[in-house]
Image 1 (tube, rainbow over the protein chains, first blue to last red):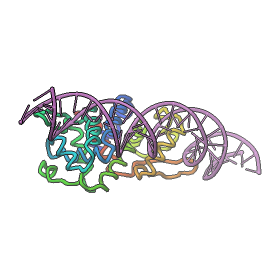
Image 2 (cartoon, each protein chain N blue to C red; image 1 turned 90 degrees about the vertical axis):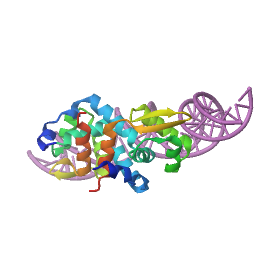
Image 3 (spheres, helix red, strand yellow; image 1 turned 180 degrees about the vertical axis):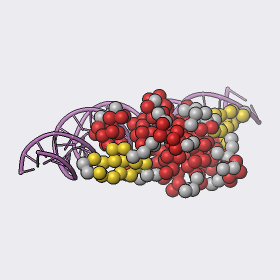
Image 4 (cartoon, rainbow over the protein chains, first blue to last red; image 1 turned 135 degrees about the horizontal axis):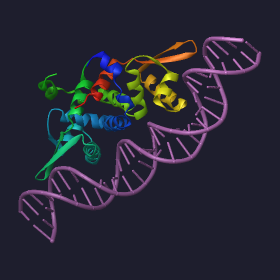
Amino acid sequence: MLKEDLVENTKWQDEQFLEDTAELLKALAHPARLKIIGYLASGKKCVKHIWEALDLPQPNVSQHLSILRNRGILGYKREGSIVCYYIKDKRVLELYKNLIQED
Amino acid sequence: MLKEDLVENTKWQDEQFLEDTAELLKALAHPARLKIIGYLASGKKCVKHIWEALDLPQPNVSQHLSILRNRGILGYKREGSIVCYYIKDKRVLELYKNLIQED
DNA sequence: ATAATATATTCTAATATTCTCAAAAATAGT
DNA sequence: ACTATTTTTGAGAATATTAGAATATATTAT
């Protein structure tokens, strides 16, 4: 993206974009939810593995998963008695990559 | 960034990274503050121009500016009787570019 | 049907965020 | 010093978010 594009860009005038983007960022703006994203960045994982790996109480993780799921950030698939989550929103993966960049 | 890097990446285990990043995202996760970032993306602007351009009450904008300033996202410079703000944190500009990308 | 395992939902108390309005600083010009 | 302009700060109520406990649901095996 060129600097000119940024100067001429008028996305910030689009209230719908602002609201949607703020919602997206709000969903990500929590240590536990970022942790979930980071853990899922390497691929689909089931709920039990998630809360065990993250060392957080199961209901708490479940709440955060539902927030991320409801905002369309995560997708899930039931596989028998277990449920596996994955990052559905590609933009979020890009954002996360951006965030872990050292600079 | 290669996919392997994402698989092997362990940033999500770094509690300090999680907290700092969540703070950063929380600061951005508001329509008015995103609007400010978008407006400033094209360069330094003074406060009056900001709240006029954004069509928001002046004290409200000032509060949002102080949030962004206190988190080190914005810098400012007094020029006589007016104060001008600019995006200081380069990561935020990168993030914003990422967010306005159509996909 | 019952038990065991895996996951989700609901409620509550504590805390944080948000907006609005009023008042207070800071600066410049007269 | 007085006034106008610009910007910041504070108090208040309204709303939202959070963790944690208790409970509920779904699936599988016996």
